[in-house]
Image 1 (cartoon, helix red, strand yellow):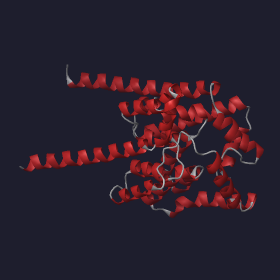
Image 2 (cartoon, rainbow, N blue to C red):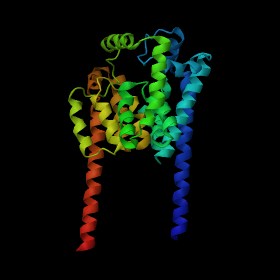
Image 3 (cartoon, helix red, strand yellow):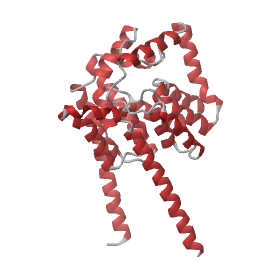
Image 4 (cartoon, rainbow, N blue to C red):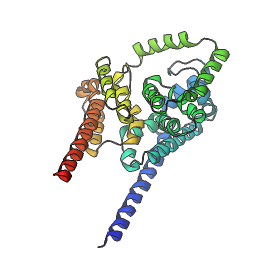
Length: 314
């Protein structure tokens, strides 16, 4: 078998995996509207239409973005919401040249569609902010502010990497407009955020390691241009961070198959063995494990490179 033939087989297998991954993402997005959707239907849609956030904790300008979905009939809006997330994931996977199949079978991908979250918006917004004209990229930064605990680190990474003040024109303008239209809403939002944290946000999906996770900031001294490190640090340092918000990270690089299986087992096991529900308080093992693997891979590549150079000059 010659090299061209082997390459053709490899490309065919790669294309098949890509198509299968995209198919699973779309299928999950569609089927989920008949199975779940509390986060979208009650939290996002309900609070957007009521004009009084109760179950959601987004900065007020976010509800302007949610409104076109919320005014549609519930199932129609939920379907469009999920399909927009799917497109967002596809954009990010293509940009990072990642593996759609490996991503499609992760918990964050499933949870985004089943719960009605919007991590696909975040994945696409991160890409938009990284590569587009500064004014257009500013819209990506604006979307990243919808969940400050998730968006702050990719937001800061974009500013650090691009170093262009024009990136801030659109998000700052939209927030200033919100103060004109809705008044100085920051105190109301912060009070609601505090109340929610005390009552509703202590959930099994948490994976943060606050305040000890703040120590991970030191890694930026060495890996300042590694977006995966920035995102993983963000998942550790926040007072609240959910496992499904790892979706943006997984569009850059999905976890290894055995790590993915471990994540599924971690969340499914307590459902079958309720006595093990206490383990969900230790969800921080997930970002810590991913961070450890990322650092190990960087170290291994550096050692391999050094060894290769050494053999070449011996």
